[in-house]
Length: 85
Image (cartoon, rainbow, N blue to C red):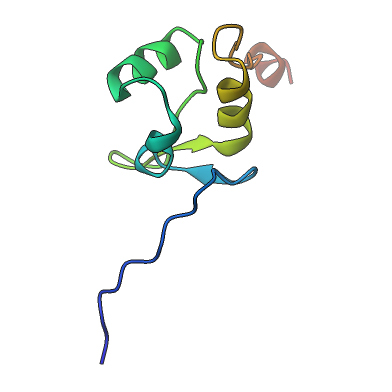
Protein backbone atom coordinates (compact mmCIF):
# COMPACT_ATOMS: atom_id res chain seq x y z
CA UNK A 1 0.00 0.00 0.00
CA UNK A 2 1.20 3.45 -0.87
CA UNK A 3 1.22 6.03 1.87
CA UNK A 4 1.49 9.76 1.61
CA UNK A 5 4.16 10.05 4.29
CA UNK A 6 5.95 13.39 4.22
CA UNK A 7 9.73 13.20 4.18
CA UNK A 8 11.49 15.17 6.91
CA UNK A 9 12.91 18.50 5.78
CA UNK A 10 16.64 19.10 6.34
CA UNK A 11 17.64 21.28 9.27
CA UNK A 12 20.19 23.11 7.11
CA UNK A 13 20.11 24.51 3.60
CA UNK A 14 22.15 22.25 1.27
CA UNK A 15 25.33 23.93 0.02
CA UNK A 16 24.71 23.02 -3.63
CA UNK A 17 21.74 22.44 -5.84
CA UNK A 18 18.49 24.35 -6.23
CA UNK A 19 15.68 25.04 -3.77
CA UNK A 20 12.17 26.38 -4.00
CA UNK A 21 11.17 29.26 -1.74
CA UNK A 22 9.18 27.04 0.64
CA UNK A 23 12.30 24.93 1.21
CA UNK A 24 14.47 27.81 2.43
CA UNK A 25 11.99 30.35 3.83
CA UNK A 26 12.60 29.16 7.42
CA UNK A 27 16.22 30.36 7.10
CA UNK A 28 15.24 33.90 5.99
CA UNK A 29 14.98 36.84 8.38
CA UNK A 30 12.55 38.62 6.00
CA UNK A 31 9.19 38.00 4.31
CA UNK A 32 8.68 36.46 0.88
CA UNK A 33 7.62 39.82 -0.61
CA UNK A 34 10.68 41.62 0.76
CA UNK A 35 12.91 38.85 -0.63
CA UNK A 36 11.16 39.16 -4.03
CA UNK A 37 11.71 42.93 -4.09
CA UNK A 38 15.38 42.54 -3.16
CA UNK A 39 15.77 39.98 -5.98
CA UNK A 40 14.28 42.44 -8.46
CA UNK A 41 16.84 45.06 -7.41
CA UNK A 42 19.76 42.61 -7.59
CA UNK A 43 20.24 42.62 -3.81
CA UNK A 44 19.22 38.96 -3.33
CA UNK A 45 19.70 35.81 -5.43
CA UNK A 46 17.85 35.81 -8.72
CA UNK A 47 15.02 33.33 -9.31
CA UNK A 48 15.35 30.72 -12.04
CA UNK A 49 12.05 29.99 -13.74
CA UNK A 50 11.39 26.44 -14.88
CA UNK A 51 7.79 27.16 -15.81
CA UNK A 52 4.85 29.35 -14.95
CA UNK A 53 4.56 27.98 -11.42
CA UNK A 54 8.02 26.57 -10.81
CA UNK A 55 10.76 28.88 -9.54
CA UNK A 56 14.08 27.79 -8.05
CA UNK A 57 16.97 29.58 -6.39
CA UNK A 58 20.62 28.51 -6.44
CA UNK A 59 21.66 27.27 -2.99
CA UNK A 60 25.24 28.55 -3.32
CA UNK A 61 23.92 32.08 -3.99
CA UNK A 62 21.47 31.77 -1.09
CA UNK A 63 24.37 30.88 1.22
CA UNK A 64 26.34 33.93 0.00
CA UNK A 65 23.31 36.14 0.64
CA UNK A 66 22.64 34.67 4.09
CA UNK A 67 26.29 35.21 5.05
CA UNK A 68 26.17 38.95 4.19
CA UNK A 69 22.72 40.18 3.13
CA UNK A 70 23.60 43.89 3.28
CA UNK A 71 26.58 43.69 0.91
CA UNK A 72 25.29 40.96 -1.44
CA UNK A 73 25.05 41.76 -5.15
CA UNK A 74 23.55 39.31 -7.64
CA UNK A 75 26.00 38.15 -10.33
CA UNK A 76 25.69 40.08 -13.59
CA UNK A 77 25.43 38.12 -16.81
CA UNK A 78 26.81 39.70 -19.97
CA UNK A 79 24.21 39.15 -22.71
CA UNK A 80 26.39 40.93 -25.29
CA UNK A 81 29.01 38.15 -25.23
CA UNK A 82 26.38 35.66 -26.43
CA UNK A 83 25.28 37.97 -29.27
CA UNK A 84 28.83 38.70 -30.48
CA UNK A 85 29.21 35.34 -32.28
